[in-house]
Image (spheres, helix red, strand yellow):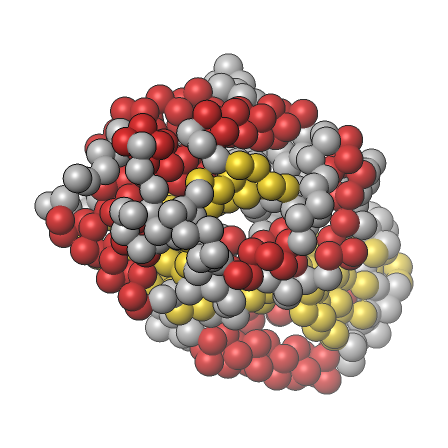
Amino acid sequence: MTITFSPDRLWDSLHEMARIGARPDGEVDRLALTETDGKARMLLRDWAQSAGCTLEVDRLGSMFLTYPGADATLPAVAVGSHLDTVPTGGKYDGAYGVLIGLEVVRALHNAGRRTRAPICVVNWTNEEGARFAPPMAASEAAMGFADEARLLATPDRFGQTSFGAALDACGWRGTRDPAEARRFAAYFEAHIEQGPVLEREDVPVGIVTHGYGVTYCTITVQGRDGHIGGSMEDRRDALLGAAEVILALERIALGTAGRGLASATRLALEPDARGNIPSRVVLVASLRNIEQAGLDGMCAALAATCAEIAARRDMPITIETVSGYPSVRFDAVLLERLRAGARAAGLAYRDLPTPIGHDALHVGRVVPSAMMFIPCHGGLSHNPAESIAPAWSAAGLAALGPAVIETAGGLA
Ligand SMILES: [Zn+2]
């Protein structure tokens, strides 16, 4: 007997979930640990409990919905992603990866079957980082790469509350030790591609072989305050130094033959006044590269360039790394199971890396993990127009469902 997954039930659940936080223009606003996020969590809990799962919530609010296996001593195989969105989010970013896991356990439950190992559907808290920076912090802390107490104290973007207080306010501070997630036997994360490759090539299943290494840094250029009517010779205009740094970021990325990406994304000027030479400029930059060695090389090039600009312009420039994660290679055996699932379903597939962060990039540093992409129209995400075809959703389920069951030891 094989398990029959229901693409229609997955599709319907995606759209029912998307009604929580829906706005008239189609966008979904489900910021982490808000009342709407709480409603989405309750819906997931109710669905999963109806499918025979038990719920545990960890101290960071991440949800673990476990469908029992025949052998309770075996570590669970996890499938998950996130239900939170950015303020102008779409229906599928994150929700697809959680609800595809739910569909796997629903199918097992309906058939009255179990796998040997338990299957755990995971909803990671605050993946987007849109309310509490940085993104993916709950999975990062669970895997031991970020400090739990520091995360709980993180202020929200409005400066009104903290991660910990928001957890209490929406009633989702649990007691499970986040570190328990390190004991998963395996972790699968399905996600919309958020890029154009799969749709352009008419390939419904993307096998994500690895994730880019990413570094976020704060670069501070220290010039000297002065009147804009002062002489040009004496100026230490920090904005000019920052402008050179921004252009250097582009040059460094373009010098990687397509393997690296870099941009400055935020800029703060002091004194930020019409009549003053900016004396201090703080910019936030992101560098990413398909390989860790490449990322290290980009960071070294940035440091050397900043030192050169600082010396030439006589203005100190400091670089502080604030967050990031290394390039992660996903597990070859799990990836091959996803390919086998696609092949068995007669689906085209291709390998590709992810330049975008996902919880799997932290989980994959500790637990054997694999990611799978399905296409999205126009590569659009974080946008009300984010959309997928029902056939793509179904294709992902056809590839991932059997891979999860096989990884959980098959049907008992
Ligand atoms: Zn996402």
